[in-house]
Image 1 (cartoon, helix red, strand yellow):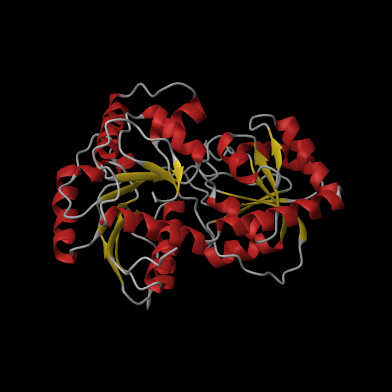
Image 2 (cartoon, one colour; image 1 turned 90 degrees about the vertical axis):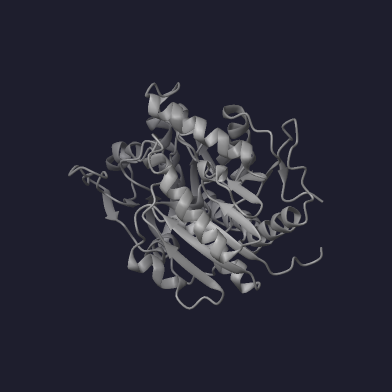
Length: 381
């Protein structure tokens, strides 16, 4: 495959969740290949420790804004402000590609082809976590804005086939779509594995379903540790520890990686997970995986994990006890997870995005396709 030429790319991100890890790893890889990237941070400002690894990356410029994230502004009250500021940055930067890690901003008058990456959405979260559709009119306006963004974008992609099909089912997508799976750096570990079960995520997030682990932790032979923010945003309420379960709170990426390198088992009882970057990072650190039996995780980890019904606490108790007590099975799944993680390398992800950028810049895509195209792997030929 011919290497894609260096390009100037404008990318949006937020610093709230996994999109930050995805975006910052991607821009590092792009800059290492010679691309110039302007990374626009929307929503709450990143912490100093989040920004520190980006300092000194050649050809990377960071623009901090306080623009509202679409899921924090379902009424769309900040859209006009965002339009003015983002388009102004684009006119100054003059990018060849606009890479948006959200939906509604795709409707702006961008000076270059637009790629929308579908990481998650409120409607699919609601259906998976609460059943049915939200009644609040604000979320209907959110859905209309997301649909308009997807319809306007020159191309869109998703991190898994399963989530791509979810997006196609929820929105009247007519533009071309593809799958580019998230990637992680595979790092050899010299840490000795400990008799420890690790989980990661916001403890109050229904999607992560970490309450299942809290409910069964006292019945398990091995201690359970959960890494992630403790407090619910906007309230004083926080999740408390129970017998055999330790809440680690927020960890920096190096701290979380160190925990993953020590843990023997990584548990993800999620109800909703479009990809699961923490699962990939745990697999890359050699953890045996116990995962919810949902389509996206099946797609990515079939044959390399133990699958458990998401809402079945008895099944989770039995599965984690089995992994803790069966050394042979645990070692088998640790090796299988590490081997599977190598499919989802950071280099593979970066190269796939650069091929999509090439196709978009060269107008390979039919920008006004009248009918929805099937999800495909990577960029068009």
